[in-house]
Length: 311
Image (tube, rainbow, N blue to C red; front, side, top):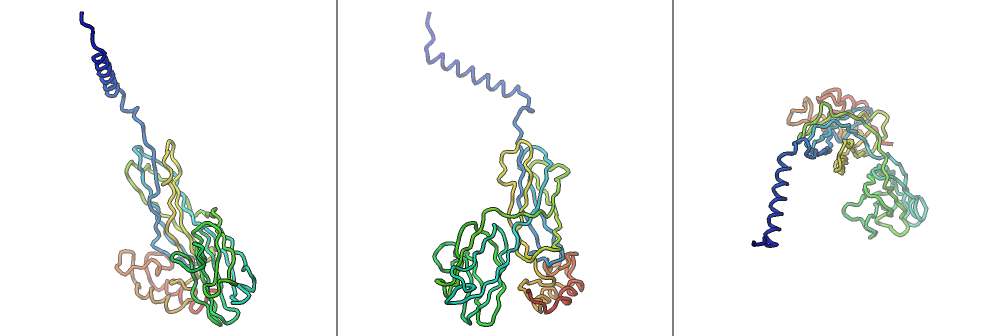
């Protein structure tokens, strides 16, 4: 009797295993297939980039279901950062505020740094944060307008880069410099929370609208953050958080916003007068009271504060 070859036995075993695997795959109930749970925030958008103190802005948050099961989940919208104020007077010999090194600026990530800058010696000065360490203003580094004799500059920047840096005067960097530290931890203040309900079907998106009321909020430039809560069984969570978009909180009537209520704040309202959100000349910022139309009530806000200067 002929004995089967080893190669033949191996081939038969492989064929049997493949047949069993195929049979099990076909027989197993489809309900045992693994369900994917994955939600994300894909966008944060506010058409209004300037909201005057005491008024509101509408912020839209878009969420998406990347999994294959309907999901209910909570979404929280927050503003990041606080406003920190500093006053610096420039002296080309004795440094900022006649101090070498200059006073320390210590803030958290996404804080607004609001600076009042002036020249104490009649010289020409400016302010910049040296992120790359070359002691010169570079692309992407915050830099103020030039300060001249008798002028007072109000300049704001957002601390968007964590680390320990130095701030300088470009014209007199040796005496005029000081420490600028941005701590990596940011301060978040909730704007609101909503539940995605009814359930969001797989592969679909939905936009949630939040209303941000700026009553009592300090002037500054605020970054927005939206977070979708992790759903049960979700493992891909990096895209549950979306940081992006910003809103400047300004004085009432300061549409531009440049710290002065003047004709330049009237112009955008005049150009959009009578417009609604579907009009070709619509301007979100010109709609100060956020009622969906640019009209006399928006002009009244500017008129009541006309001539005011940011203190």
